[in-house]
Length: 388
Length: 90
View 1 (cartoon, each protein chain N blue to C red):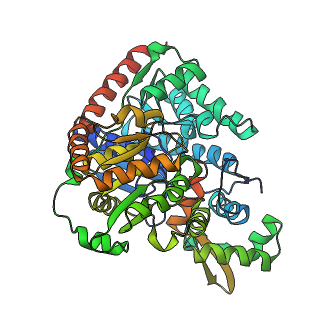
View 2: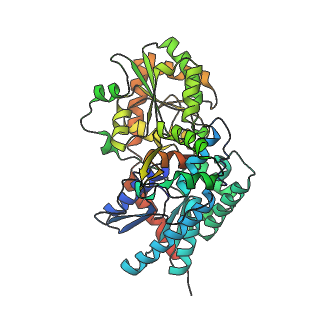
View 3: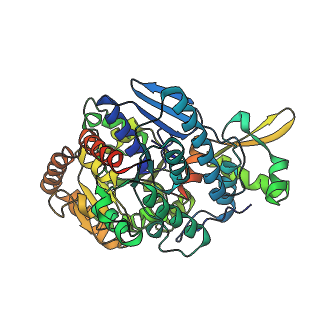
């Protein structure tokens, strides 16, 4: 499996997906090798049973992000070649999004191995249909990957429709397999008081949590703009924004402008166990994204037994059933975010009902199911790939 | 450097953002791979004092560490810096 992020290098949902899938495949008895980028403090080589993580340094400097991507693909190819000599050629190569298309396609042809590609997002949706030369390159790689792959996986119905309409991938080639959550992570002892205290949430205060990359796509600026209205209705509350990203300074500035900076915690980047504790300690989780191909954080909040407010976009609208296991709001609408959040915080019975139904739903999204379905896709890819 | 971000909407000032991306693609991700600040200034076409001001913002935010090695001022990204630099493209 080739992916540019793998824990502890967690940029977005890809890392969580590849971690969950690779662990589940290994626990089903398969030998899984993940080739990914190195990360400060993480070992270059790691093994957990039949799961091997190979973290590759990029030894050559690049002049730009896009040429750097091509360079790290070269180092991924080199590592894939070394592993093929050491362990034998793999039965399948699995790439995730455009970032590893060049390495995946090269490995496919050199080692005569079937290729599978998962789409977690597309450039057109990420960049709001930008016409830049960089976007043209990324879209070209997306098409190329979907063309070279024997089978393509889309993480939601929305994502599948994007792949079919924008990339013109034949429908019979595309399988929809969702993300999942590991429910066991959300069980066990929880020191909610300590978790809340770490983020300056005082006893008796309601904790409103949002998690994700601090980028425009995530809509955290809308949530901060909604927070003054939430505070008017629920003064004893604190907003906790978890994650890092290039928009942090801007978000802090918006919080200042809205006069809620003193009531907002920017928790920064946290590890997985801190995230689980943070979600479980929350009174409501808000996912105000402007677009979201899947939205794994919604599933994680459900698994944590916390009521949810989500934007009615992409995969989020597929996961959440409005007023049944969460509340949906229109994207880009701080007033709607505020109204839905206040509704949950002021109605204990509603909050409890949404949380219970959400927890039940999260249990139906297991990594073992995802792994079993992905193995079926691998088997199809092997059948459909013929080298004479 | 050609590291212009291209996402719409509000974002960090271009200076620190470009610098973060540059440090990542130049491979400055650990103390052993720290880049001399004077060399970085030349690569970016900036004066050292101007670059130092931008680096101060990154170190204050926890995204980078400046250090002295073999008598030279150097800089490298922290894990949080790597994630923040990557987030512009994910």
